[in-house]
Length: 606
Image: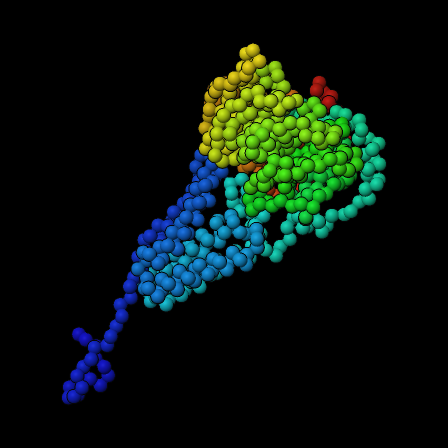
């Protein structure tokens, strides 16, 4: 029955007229719903898989971005919206994205755009038009664009302070003060003259034999020798000696006597700092006006200084490489690795810590040709030799004894190269190409076995090095994909390897590469071996210190405590009964409880 206009009826000379109606075209919604589901699955799903998000980070990073782009393409190509509706929706979405990226805090560009801005805005748009698929175009598209604009605009309220080990952004309100800003605002300036006099009086003897001369100790193996540590931390908890705010950096400490050396970022100034190990007070600083920042790692230096009796050698994230007088902090010599190696800083900055061998200091630069590894005279800074290596690595050169010969080991994207420390001559080149980054140290077992740890899905390989008539060769022993440590280094004890795989501590048999146990979620923390005590000390990504037994039978935690606040990727240091920890915002010293030997304390604790 047709509707008729008012007044139509019997006797009306005007014939009845049908009222024109326009049918609403329902949107084709299933592609949008599928893309929303895939975006959520690719972002959150890898966290539940073996190895976690760090193993499948490309899925978690690219998946939501790809789904967002496909939603944008679905709208004009396959949504069944009207022509005008598709045009205005597509243009408005592009305008929202462009405006948000332009107005957002610079730290939110890049990963912030990929992980938050695009998925939130495009996801809201797709969800709203799907729910309102049968409504009039002006209603469904207008409301969807309005809410999508709110979703995109939410990013304008945030800033990004980097990502954690699982690639989740650490976002804060844009107007809030960062830890670095708070540290700079609250930091008290102390008179350096008195501190320097104290250093001159006491530091010379300490420098002659530093207890912890550089990154992960003298042999880069992260093993501390010393008194036996008590394991009942409920009855005898570690005691905080001091805690101080510090500038951002992923550096660890070099330790000599009562003095600590590390690197920090303080605003526009990349800084090397000497601290009093007893009080945490600043002794001296040396500052250079450079700043490196990246949206995942955050700002600041990545390397740890190397210490000798005559010099403190430090490498900054932009490539400044220099020697300081360890007593005064004065610059002795300086080079720019970017210029020497003919390259720009890598994506996450120059990260190699210097290594000392005889009269030379060695650093990785990753330049083309023979500018991969560089060696300089300790005293003058004069170039001594350079050698080819891969062009992509966040590892550090390492001096080790292999088959009875001292060599420099450098792990890069090309594999592991063995160099003569005096001349730079290549002794052995073991190829094991890797398309992503390597950010781990080769781990030497005994006199002839070397582990090549590699992140993501590649795993860890053990090789055996042999020497015949001054010629070196290497053969694979095993390769294990169950140990993917990413950038958390390894320790070994009595035939077993301990490392963090996908945020979980793992024990591996060094003879076969087979897993013995896996347990305890510590994020991208770092492990230290307390060798004489047969214990592992883990500094977790959340700033907790956990004590465990170094045994292959089971994962056994003995105690733990919260040491520092904030994301923690830095390597801990233990010297005697003192534990030194730091991250990008705090540093602290704790006195570890000691076990009694035959009823007597081992050393007198302060």
